[in-house]
Amino acid sequence: MSLTNRILTAMVAGILLGSLLNLLLQSAAMSGQIQIFLQEYLVDGLLDMVGRIFIASLKLLVVPLVLVSLICGASSLGDSARMGPIAVKTLCFYLATTAIAVSFALIFAVMIGPGENVQMAGQAEFQAAEPPPLVEVLVNIFPDNPIRAMADGKMLQIIVFALLLGYAISHAGEPGKRIAAFFRDMESVVMRMVGILMGLAPYGVFALLAKLFSTLGISAIADLAAYFFTVLIALLFHALVVYSLLFKSFSGLSPRIMITKMRSVWAFAFSTASSGATLPITLRTVERKLGVHNSVAGFTVPLGATINMDGTAIMQGVATVFIAQVYGVDLSVSAFITVILTATLASIGTAAVPGVGLVTLALVLGQAGLPVEGIALIIGVDRLLDMVRTAVNVTGDATVSVIVAKSENQFDESVFLNPRADIDQTDEAEPVVAVV
Ligand code: ASP
Image (cartoon, rainbow, N blue to C red):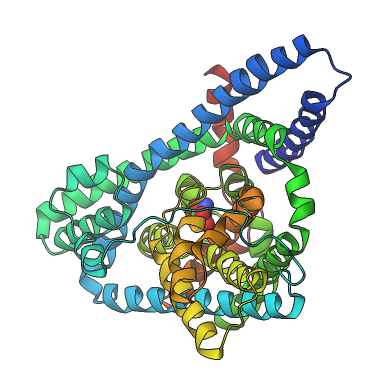
């Protein structure tokens, strides 16, 4: 079986085992001792441990990978004067796709009306965090200490540092060439590490999903079914229809191939609910399966994982309408425009880790004049939606990367069209993992 199929099988098996455990742990017919054993040793013991090791091993790769691939990319583009236009184009695409995502989310939410006739207002309490001032946010993009930025995993600061270093390398003559060759070698080595750790994915994905589904309250979904399915429909529409149309019209390539090649990235995003943890896999897939040259992918993918969150913005759009309906507030046209703008900006400020979309939702609600406590109403189903919206977030990064790379001639179509691209490398890595 190919690695992708093994990951997908592990995903289904994890969901099934988790759901079974959920039933067993709640069943009155089951002996209390067996339940304690399952909970303590299996769910909170083995599954929790394997899942956490898997996430740690993915996160471990993020900083080295972003740093070296961005340095390689910037150093190879540095003297071609294309860095600026690529950055501007990428930013425009990221912002535009997010604005489109919220707009459709609002349309779906208004059409479906998930919060109409729901009696929940006043039930909940929620303490919103104080957002940092805009000036601070902007100043914080620039690192005063690159080592601290890396230690703290501050992605935008790492991006700024790597871009500067890469640019300097491309303008430093002979010494620059030697350093560039070193970073290119490092990039291959770190990519190899990604390949090796991908071999662990079936176990990691299985453990994460089994643990999660063993605790997931499916009954919460029943209470919030209208909200849950509205978000889900909007997410699927964006991932399958909007991206495909954009992809086809801007790159002329087949969206079907893109979707097929993104399956393993989706499995990672879905099980970790973190675009940050998925970043190594997104980057490897975008470069080695979709054919985007490192000079573009090294910049667009880490930037996208940090600031481009279409799935998150969709959830925020639907949640705003839902909360307005529950509290009986009529949203004006200007409130809708405010929601589009703030959700687009909030998605930039949303960290690429689980659950943060719900925190930045406070910003959107505040701007739209809605009670922030409304967030507490939707917390119950957020984790499952987080998993799906993270998959949408990473799809947006990959889609924009291909579009930008194609328009800049930094794209290898033969890799894109080759159904076996990168399969050989990842499979090669498996025996090593078996020994580990
Ligand atoms: N979990 C999302 C991500 O990492 C962010 C969020 O919506 O909470 O992309």
